[in-house]
Length: 55
Image (cartoon, rainbow, N blue to C red; front, side, top):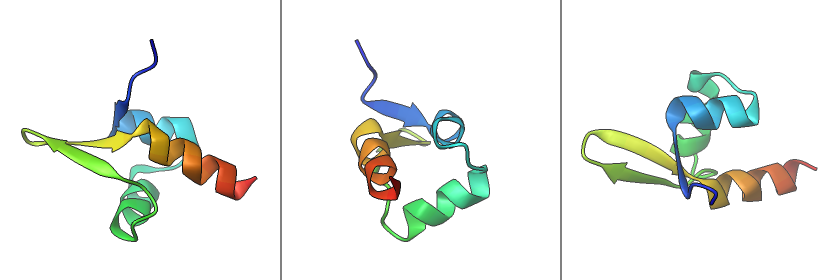
């Protein structure tokens, strides 16, 4: 079963980006996140959507 949410580090690795670039995508609304406690997690659906856009 594929996870629905990834940590910032996992999402950056999946997109081959640095953390700063990933935070910029989050800030500009290109990636969706959810807050769980103190952690910010990126939705896998938004990562796939961004990857499809870039193809």
